[in-house]
Each structure stands twice: as structure tokens, then as C-alpha cells.
Length: 422
Ligand code: EPU
Image 1 (cartoon, rainbow, N blue to C red):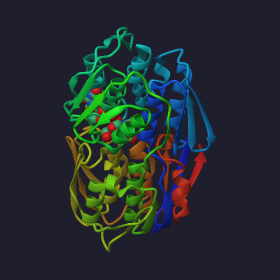
Image 2: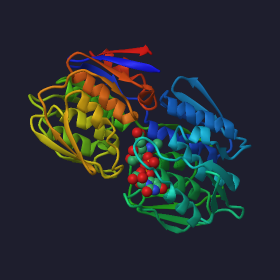
Image 3: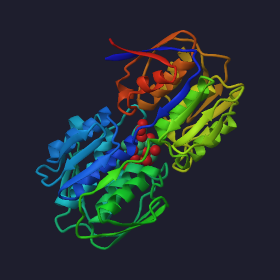
């Protein structure tokens, strides 16, 4: 298992390029199952989660190949096994995204229930409810979701809100299935995340009729079939936000290319309140640190609210702010595994229910720490960049799931991170 040795204390400066969005690429890859033929997706990051999805699609019968490092071709001419095995699904929850497309294209699908993960219990009831509303017969047996739609799917008005609001991947699953359903589907309380809009745009290039994606009420008119397409994934807004924090936490200045500031409204607002200066550039943005880091209260919410996927990274920066902040997690209330690790680095954090109170300290100190999930790992790298001395981060395989060559990118702008095989 690889470890990172992070030598902290250097202000970052220079230019960094953001990769294509992981959380867009994964549903897009699943959606390519909807059309017979070869779909090509550009700017697909090379990440372990993408490799898992390639493996899953391969087992289903869709061959994936990369002609260039970031261009993925998926030949879905034949689907011989509409099946998502537990061994893959348990490693990557986004595998659940094949359920809707397989059901729509093959009239049946068997996909393992994903189970929980290190950021908390993650139910799939909304996925199942939405697909049932479209007419699928679904039962759970031996840990698998067994779905059938022998007479095809039928459009309907579906309310898809859950106890924590909308669901990104449930919206994606139902939207994908509805593209080939008979008649009109309306998804109420649809997720509005840029990745949902990207998926809708991708499906539209395949011939789908989707209206108002990005609003809480989305409409889909079913079509008899879709065709393969060529498409470029949007930039990864969470990776971009992570590098914005890297500039802030090290008191540096970064130019961030391939970054959509319009996807980062709540994030930019919080950073500006913390004293950062953000300017738009042709390729993305330039972000520079203020004299001090000011505290700010953050509450995670569905888009356009503050993203849960940047909560841990912001907590790292707030831990050295001049004052106290409250971080409230409203999407995944247990997503605080980074708190004890940051505490080992000298952060003053107190978790109370779904909030963590952050008392800013003048600086962090290095320590051996453990990455627990993807975003927590990124936050620990950021904390390591700000800390005095050398921080050892164990289990960095988590970070390889979602950040392409993070140490190379950060080292090019002045960081000192060494990957070692332990
Ligand atoms: N929820 C339900 N029932 C469901 C589905 C979700 O109650 O059937 C709840 C969840 O437990 C949570 C809330 O709804 O409280 C929102 O979860 P959502 O379904 O939107 O999460 P997701 O679609 O499974 C995606 C991202 C996550 C990101 C969340 C929230 C992908 C592959 N994953 O997950 O990304 O945190 O949306 O924005 O797109 C990450 O990249 O590190 C990551 C975890």
C-alpha cells in the first residue's frame, strides 16, 4: 500500500490543470450502454474508479479501450450479461449506475446492493423507487437488486426526494432509464448538480429528449432508441476546489486551468469570505491568498449549495483560520472521519452531531496519519502541505480513486510530496 510523505511549509505558486470530472465520467460510461455501437468519451481521467467501471462494463459485454490516455471508447454493440457483481459494486458505489441503462436496454438487470461505505450508510431506496415507478418489477435477493421490465418501461411523474434532499445518482439512474421509456417522465426533486446536467447533455447527443436538466423538475420524453456519441466530460469541480484550498492553506497563488467557476459558486463565496481573491481567466481562474485566513461557517447542501465533497478540505484550511468556524454536514451526517486524523496534527476540532466546531490554531504539526476515504485523504494532503515537518499519510489508495496524479500536479507548483510503496 502506497504512502505519501508530505513535507509542508511551502507556499504553492504556478499553474495547475484540472482533469475531467470523475463523477461525470462514471455515469456517462454507464449511459453508453444505452446505445448499440461505439461511444467515445474525451477527458476521462485515469483513476482507479474509472478502471473499476471499465472492468464492470467489460464483464457486461461492452469493450472499453483507450486510444489516447484520456479518450475512452466503449463498444456496447453486444451486451451479454446485464449483471453487476458484488466484488466490483462493493468497491465502487457508482457501479449502481448501470442498473437503469441495463434495465432500459435489456429489459432486465441484476446488480449487487452496494452496502455502506466510510462516509456513512448510503441507501439506494430512491434508485429502486424511481425505477419501480417506471414500471420495473424489482426485488432484493441474496444481496442483489433483481430488476425486470419485460413489457418495457413507462414514463410517469416521479417524486425523487429523500430525507437528505435530492440524490445525484438516483436522478442519473432514473433519467437514463426514462430516455428509452414509453411516454413522458417528470422527475420532481431532481438533483441539479453539474454532473447531472452533463449526463443530460451527453444523452441529448445520443438522441434523448431531456428538458430542464439542472432544475428540480426535469422532463424526459422517451424515444425508441439512442445512438452512440462523441462527447467531452466537464472539468472536475471538486478537484478544482481542492486546488483552490491548496493555494489558500499554503498562503500561495495558483492559476487553475480547465476549471468552471460557474460550477463553484458556493465554494468561491466561502473562499472569498476567508480572504482569498479569485479572478476569472480564459481557462479557469487565478486564486491568491489574503494576509490571513478568516473563519467562516459552512453547511453542505445539494447543488448549488456547498458540496459535501469539499467539506473535509475546507475543514483543513479552517483549522488554521484566525477564529472559530462551524462546519455542518447535511448530506452525509457521519462524514467526519478526517476529524480525529486532523486532531493528531494539532487541529482543535469538536464534533457535535452533524456539526464540527473548528477553533483555529496558528499552525499544524506533522504526524503519521491515515486516509479513510477519498475526500478525507485529499484534506489530509492539504493539512500536510500546511504543517511543519514531514507528514506520513497511509492508505493513499483512497486518493487514487478520484485525483489524477495529485502528487505530480502539486509538486509542479512547489509542493514536496513523495509517494512510497510501503
Ligand atoms: N440517499 C438516500 N437514498 C438513496 C440515495 C441517496 O437516502 O437512494 C441519500 C444519501 O444517503 C445522502 C443523500 O441522499 O444522504 C445524497 O446522496 P446522493 O445519492 O446524492 O449521493 P450519490 O449520488 O451516491 C454522488 C457522488 C458523491 C457525492 C454525492 C453528493 C458520484 C459517483 N458520487 O453520490 O461523491 O458525495 O453525490 O453530492 O457521483 C466523492 O466523489 O467522493 C463522492 C462521495
